[in-house]
Amino acid sequence: MTREDAITITEKDVLNTMDIFTKVPSILLGRWVSKNKNLVKTFEDQVQGYKNQVSLEDMQKLELIMKMPVSQLQNILQKAYLQTGKKQLKILSSPQARPFIETNLLELKRVLDL
Picture (tube, rainbow, N blue to C red):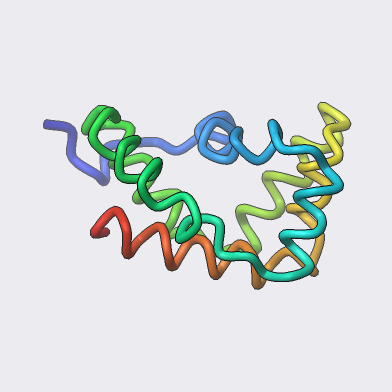
């Protein structure tokens, strides 16, 4: 079992965790962000299914990512946007997305029992 303090979180880990949002059309993501939609609650069954399939190390990485300050996550998303040009990353890195990210992180912690 890997110790949590021995795990290093990279920008790639954060982007892999947020990857699902880059698959959503940017217009839809923008609407969800503006309405502060709780997507984790909407897709709770799928999240539970994911929880049962993920490795212990990946779960520990996810937990560490969820403990990161939202500002730090958004900085990583901004850097990724500048590298990839993916509009979804631009949306998530904007100050207006902060409540959306906070809401969904809190819900994800609840669903994953973290």
